[in-house]
Image (spheres, rainbow, N blue to C red):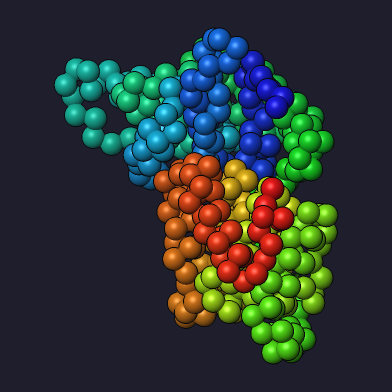
Length: 366
């Protein structure tokens, strides 16, 4: 496996959109690093990348606790904090505020309130929290935008530089060539992947279920595995059958999850495409499976957006057809549970579910 090294602030910033899967704006990003032995020496490897909206109003509260908890679970030893915000002039002023506040606290003077809360203030809070937890505060950057030619500033040294095109970064090129993954222009573009489109006709699917009985699930899973492995796009007929399959029982839904084994990215794309064409309980179940595929592939942003779409579908259905799996994935995402842990827990369940419907698991398992 090719190891990609990020040696400069410019290289780190250019790689962030690829790490997240989209180009963030008005964001606070934390790259958590852990120690790993490579070729006999200790090096820093990315353990987790998180993003939250930048604060934009006075008096906004910001709690670093979830980040500290995630850092502990990820065995983080160092962090890189990045504020993406347009107001570059705020860098020096907010750093002066941070110095003053610390000085007042050290002098025993009550630091009662700081009203100018922005992405940089969030960064200051996070950095202090990481330092208090014994985590190396390696680097903190402010950048006006993650696009070619934007100004970045080191929040400690005030060194500055210009960003490079994220699509030309080594990481972006690697993902495009080796994994067929591209970076979305925005979070909204990812959300569009799950937006409803023309509804598939379910009548032929119901007729097939009536004719095939329990073999219906086996046929649907096997056909879907073939399509995913060839990176095809599900048509309306297959979407309707897969959607119906997901509503037969939780076990049938779990059998569909097995199709992601070894082909997580392609499976996430297939289930997103299917989710756009089905409605009601079928949409909830398929969006949840799409979230699972994204999660085990390490694509946190897509996971979160798929879960949001599933939650919206649950609300549209007056709370009916919600699933423990959706809640489990939501918990895993919120608490930064490793994709490997989720895979370990759910792959065996999905394989057994597929086997129970007569799917040739041993032949399909990669």
